[in-house]
Amino acid sequence: MTRRSQSPADLPSAGLPPGADAITRRGFLTRTAALALAAPFATTACATPGTEVTIRLAAGEKGGFYHAFAQLLARTAATTGLRIEPLTTAGSLDNLALLARGDADTALILADSLEDNPDPPQAIGRVYENYLQLAVATDSPLHTVADLRGTRINLGSAGSGATRTGEKLLRAADLDPTQLTITHLPLQEAATALTTGTLDALLWAGGVPTPALTTPALRLLDLGTLTTPMRNRFGYLYDPVLIPAGTYPASPASPAIHTIGVANLLVATPTLPDDTATALTDVLLRHADSLVPTEAAGTQFLDARSLIGTGSIPLHPGAAHAYRTNHG
Image 1 (cartoon, rainbow, N blue to C red):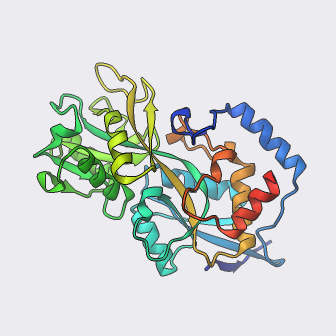
Image 2 (image 1 turned 120 degrees about the vertical axis):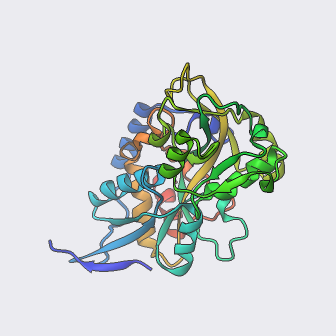
């Protein structure tokens, strides 16, 4: 449930849904401005004068996409009178647990983290795409996922969505997780362990470039050939995406890398009041250009057309109201 306190006063084209085209930042801004003129703000964040609604948002670990996005969302929402309190967490699985316990009102999650969830949340919208990034030392003899057999790999911190997605990735490459030594360190610790030689590889799901991986000592493995096996074995949630050449400064060169994208969803507990969910959704719709973290600059843009693409996860009634108001 939300808490009330007294107040003192672009998806990359490769990852877009079928039939959607990539748009420019300028084009999106033009449409966003038109929407703002055509449809006045439907609700306010404040239910009564003198109070403000606080939305607890389970985000992710510092240095990652979720944490950066949550901070931007909180700052932007504050200009509309909506207070968002980002919570630092381990990631998707941790976030879902917080929602289930009532310790968070909203959460950022990987779409494939919802399997077998007994109490599924409702969606506010699809926000961006996480890129699977499998990093090794620049001079490592590892070049494919199949080469990982018998190595030491970090599959995301405990409680992150990458732990579940990583196990699927290994199976798609015909590797059994028992054939590797798997750890679950936070990103910064894992990156340090990789550069010092106490890890052979790390898997990260996030935006690009991820600062912790931006070092000539590391390079990424191409995962493009595993997109189809992932989709065939585990469903449609896995998209082919491209990390552009030069994104990471690996030596001697940083070629374009094909990898796998998984949609990020902003979800909410069904108990989130409808007017609060509407106000939160309006922030996404009207301030998209302010919600592009550095970790996603140049590769992804929040697109109003893709926000409603939440797959089998139903929209929160308040979010659905916002989309109907803005788009008919």
